[in-house]
Amino acid sequence: MSPKITRRWAWIHKWSSLVCTVFMLLLCLTGLPLIYHHEIGHVMGYETEAPEMPANTPKANIDDIIAAGKALYPGKIMMYMSQEADEPNIWNLTLGDHPTDENFKPVAVDARTAKVLAQHNFEDTFLGVMFHLHVDLYAGLWGKLFLGFMGLLLVVAIISGVVLYAPFMRKLDFGTVRRDRAPRLKWLDMHNLLGIVTLVWALVVGATGMINTWADLLLKYWQVTEMAEMVAPYKNLPPPSTLASMQDSMQRALAAEPGMKIGFIAFPGTPFTSAHHYGIFMRGDQALTSRLYKPVLVDAQTAQVTDNRDLPWYLTALLISQPLHFGDYGGQAMKLLWALLDIATIIVLGSGLYLWLKRGVVAGANAAPADMAEVPAVALEGAGK
View 1 (cartoon, helix red, strand yellow):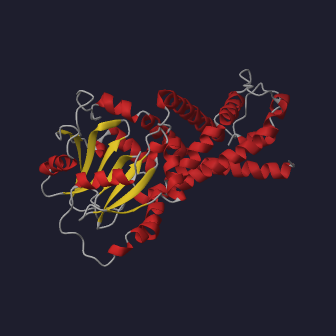
View 2: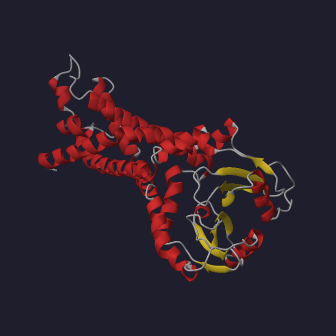
View 3: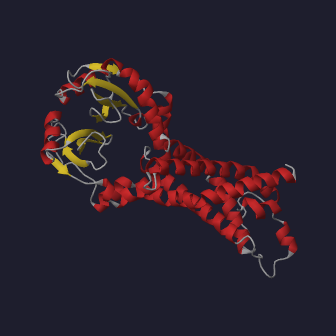
């Protein structure tokens, strides 16, 4: 590259990095405990566990499970119920005053005995705080979109950093860290080494994180397009006065999608279904397919399946991006890898900020001009922020 083009890339790298660095540090710091959210929840005592029972213990009637939740909150209605892929013995119920109630009440019910196990409110926990800081900064949709823009700047910073890496390394062997020189040179080498080592991971996590911030917008688009088409015959009908048995509705949904399991159920009026349907979302039984859902709409008054179809490509891409972002689908080994790469990225971001703050400081009183000449000017001006 010519010096002029190199300076342009350096300017892009410097400012895209500077604008997003503080927020990326926040996301890396809050994302670290979220990688181990199950383990932390267990240690802190708000991870619900089902009591030990024989493996062949039959499951309770779903209607009885719903009744157990409603008995705690007689004036509230069902919003959602779900099961974790690795915990089939617990149903997590969500109840509220109306289908979009933000002050909902969570209830965990034993899937075999229909007894209430816990009423942990995730919002009030340490992990709940970390989750909101990581996802939306407690600012709702606008917070998500803002963090999505920061993710876009991170992707730009990574790409521009790769472009600048070749001219910076032309006089140095890969992995060189000049510890006997000025502190700024040592941190510059560490910054570039860790940056190139974590390149693919940071690009994947940054890109998938950016996609995740579009979830609300993609869901709304799906609602006004495919969902509207699926429920069109019910457009002018009044909402059902009585609701059909959820046990019967689930059995029909399972029959419509053999080989799949139930991931979660949206009750009438919630954003994932219509005012006339149970939205029963089926999932696969493998590590990755357990995150991919297929909606089955069941008439909430007759318990008859009215439509079932695959999600559109953009929602599938969103669902695939979530496990790739959090690294929680490959067991403990993958969690450890994600945690180590997260820590390395924190060092990259912190060293970049340090290099920017020290940009005007002379490397050292006894540093010869020839020493500084070993580092391309662009690296000192831009690549190291």
